Structure formats: C-alpha cells, structure tokens
Image (tube, rainbow, N blue to C red):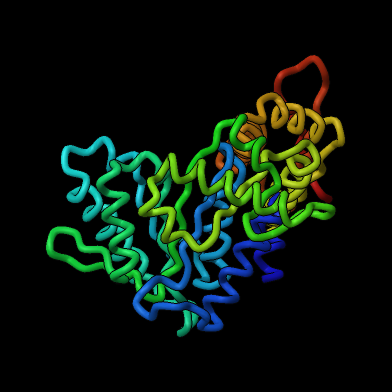
Length: 311
C-alpha cells in the first residue's frame, strides 16, 4: 500500500487501517461469502481527507478515481422518496463506473455512502440488511455489494474529533495500555452507535478516525499542489519560478481557518494561483518557451506574475 501512503498527507493511522482492511479483503479472509469485502467507517472533521483516501484507493486499485461510486446521503434525507433518490444515484454511479474498462481483472467496486449519519434511520437499517444479503435492492433493481468495498463517512465536530484524535480503532499508540485502547474502542462504538444506530454499527468492520490537520501537513499539501502545477506547466513547455514569499502567502491563507482542513488551502491555491495562470494561458501571454515568476509583495492581497521570455 505504499502508493496509497504517497497519495495521502497527514493521515498515517487512517492509511494503516485502510491498508490492513484491503490486505485482509484481498487475501480472502472474510466470514461470509455474500457480504462485502470490507465495511469501513471514516469519521473525522471537514476537509481531513476522508473522500481523498477513498479516491486514492480507487486510483490505486481501479486505475481511476472516477470509478468510485458515490451515494450522497444528505440527498436521501431531503428527497420525498429516499429509495427513488437512492436508485437514481446508484444507477448513475454504476453506469459511469462500468463505462470505464476495469484497470485490473481483480478490481473490486468501491461504494461510498457519504454522510451516512444524514440518511433517514430507516435507510440505515435497510443498508445494514443489504450488507448481510450482499445486495442492495432499489425499485426492483439489485445492486450487488458482494466483493465490494463499502465506505461510510461521517463528519465529527471539533469536540468529538478531539476525543479520538489520531485514533484508528484496532491500532494502539506508543505507550498506550490495553485498557486505554479498549476504552477508546468502547467510546467510539458508543458515539457512532448513537449517531448511526446499533444495527448498522454492528456491520462495520473498522472505524477509522481522521485527524484534524496541522500546519506541517498543510505545508506538505501546498508543496504537492505547487509541484503538480509545475509539472502541468512543464508539459506546456512553460517554466515556473515561485518565490518563498509567494509560498508563505498561500500557506497563511491555508491556515486562516483549519475548521475545513485542506479546503481553505485548496480555495486559496485556485483563486490566487491557478485562475490567474489559466487567464494568462488563455490570453496567450503564457506560451511555450516562456517562464512565469510568481512573487508576493506585502501588504498586497494577491500574487504578482511576471512573464520572462527565454531567448
């Protein structure tokens, strides 16, 4: 699972838990042949990388993050008929997933039920029964969950996240006693049981807790984003020089509000760097053989772009 570790920043415990679940699933260690390969619950604050890990899993095993099948449980709660809405989401997801040739013959479907705590309680009971059967019935259609990897996500408040910070249930931190690990496990089960109901929680193989990201991990993600942009421009034969001051400007934006994790940083990179670069490319000012130097001069609230011509 080294590839997965390289794609995910700041969630070592979560990646370890997912890697273990995938290893067990692919090795065939499951008790019921009709059940999914694994059912994981991803719990953590906004922007901590829950969907990013699922997408990385799809890229690693399916060759394309687009093959990830989503069910938005918030829409189920808002729909007049949750099962009709479920059918529409699954039908669209399965069609799109199977429209792309499988990356590997052994590839398994990955289905994400996003914000499962927002789904109606009756649907959560319906899903628990479907996991037992290995198929989800909706409007006369059967969507197979056998040999599938099921991921449920919930958002934790800051208070709840702090209770389980750095915790992947089933793994112990250095120096923790067995009693402390068992206490964390019991607390997590109680909390998720209150949120989801015991019927569904009893079908979860592993609870994976995502940490709130720190400045160190925000900086690592910024370095990755800048490297991606540099590679993209290099493919267009355009050079990029990024000053330390410009990098500090983007990092400051990313750290303004950690409530939403990476989302604040991603918005900053898009608004202050990617959009201006796109405008320069579309206007023809940035063309093959040019170099763009990105600077920041305080107290400005934007980056400065200087175009150099390579002679």
